[in-house]
Image (cartoon, rainbow, N blue to C red):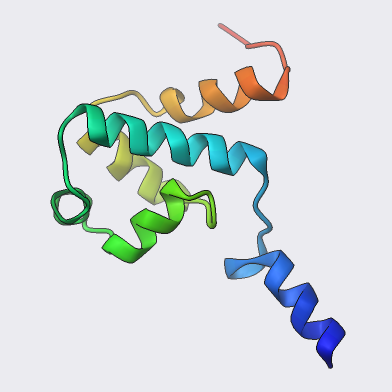
Length: 98
């Protein structure tokens, strides 16, 4: 039973494990929010996402759902690709442009 609990903790929310890319995307979210001078409470109200969840995104503990990425991009005034560009840069994968 203890092994099962340890495995569940590693998996994270909704059965999806997080990795260094999630942490880097979270850091981008936090940096942009701070650049705009938004508090966690203001950010939560503007995105309609709970403050606790937003803090977990920023910490890289959980990853946003696709629908939430749109809300984050809208409020942070960045294109959706903003979140994926940082992930591609950090993973060493070449960027694909049209």
